[in-house]
Image 1 (cartoon, one colour):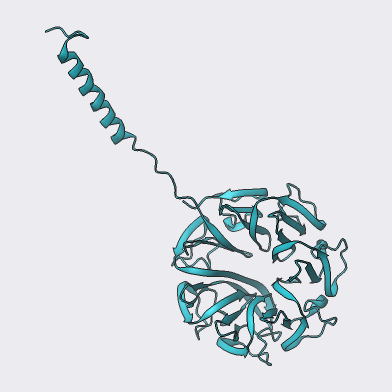
Image 2 (cartoon, rainbow, N blue to C red):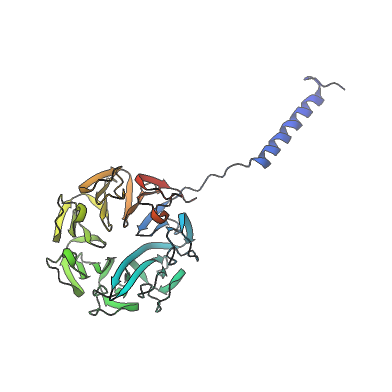
Length: 387
């Protein structure tokens, strides 16, 4: 039998062939699923690893994992983000490599708070910095306690505020950075004081904000790190000033915001990390500028976001950690881009979240800390995908 375009059987055969090809195409080339858009709200960068938190409470981690600091149950490094757990509202990372009392201290750890106020920790525990009463490293999240609202991981110590405003500390106490009046290490939380709302832990020192806007400091004080006009160490909290809303510190310098949006810095000023146009250290806070809403002090560089969403960076840039496309140090803030909401300055790399919830990274990529699947440094911010 011959088939023609006017023959009904021809039309049926043509339609059948089309349907067969369509079904075959679907089997061999299924539709590519559209990835769920990322919606990040917080980041934490440190020397060897990085954390990011999504609005849905999911934690992502990447970078070096030799002490279990990624929390995925392994000790394997990864140069792209891996999902750890969900249900969280706060994250923090800490790191320290130092020689103290004849002992090498290598500390790389993480902590997070769940929406129910429970505190969890993982990674290095050599100095009791996890707070679970032991000195054993943990490659998975371990429960520390309840009713926490703010946390900060330092070099090898931890600061935390509970919902009732009480301040707690634990871990390495070589310089009195716990603030309990001693220099004895603690492997479980000890009460320091009350009336606090937030904390920032450095390598060997600590800062905390009270609900009345007063800023308190203690611990190591080299190069005027505590901002009290001296280089004397303090083993208990003492007041630095009033009218503050945020504080961020690192190994050698500190940053703070006041209620009027002015930015203040103090401490070591190597590579111009204070942003005042000099390289001279300051032992009292100096004003850098105004209109800021988010700050982060890295080991050798500083990041800040203004209320208009512009991102600014200054300090050491030898590893491209400023993100301005160069490796030149900057002694005053330089504009990096627009549309940002929050930042985190690590030792040699930087992380940021934009207003649209996208995740960005730049700087040194040792251990894969940028999370872009490579080990290549980035001199400009690059978007990081997790889905």
